Image (cartoon, rainbow, N blue to C red; front, side):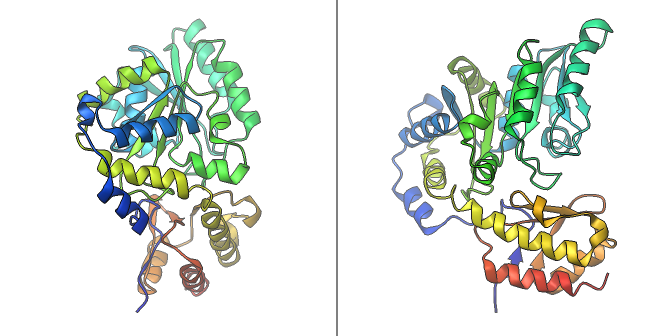
Length: 342
């Protein structure tokens, strides 16, 4: 029998043979002392890819985001973020215990933090006794809106507001390389406005574990201290960093395949449930988000067809393509979507 089609997330991928061989052969040292050569190579490779001076390897994207917020969120100030952002909704309320500033949310239903909303928050902090804004967190791609990609114009507009006000920018780029492939714009250019940028190796890039946070040398030096405080300092981490090097070297360009397969899912959803409002022409990356009439019924129907899916909010279903999902798996999923009874 064919294996189940797992579309719950792009974190469910299994390491490739090349990754397993690299992990087995990795040269290692104690990363707590900065002595793991494979970790150092990964950090340097990533920093160069995103146009920053330095990077630090961390166990998860959540930890990378939390470290950035600890570094950039000045105590007694506000960090502006989209109401649907990962740091707001999907990190188990971590900011409430890990940082000394408060999150100030703005509408991000289009996948971006609007520059006027940031400007209004900054003005309120200066003129109206509201918290001063010390940082803004943006997410590219924006998962809850269906893997939406920020345009360079939107990024430039936000930077034009944040920069003169001295507001730091953290880019949650968990799927930043999906944005690079979708737009043809290098990750370094997409991250140019960011003070810090985080990227997950364990999502679309297919590594078994790990994320990276990049920024200035001074910030990343401080980030290593915060990583240790959060329990994220690793020892012979080159074993997993080796998989990250394979991911960066071999799994970026192939993200286009995931995007094409996601468009097929969008087409099927749009045909079956037109009221959901999905348009195949707007499918940007590898995330498909929609609200069917009977989410629980749909998930049960898909499960009966050996297709795994999940929800990300009440009534909201998500399908995510990745390197373990091929065209045949998409064929099976499309057939299951088309035959859904409700």
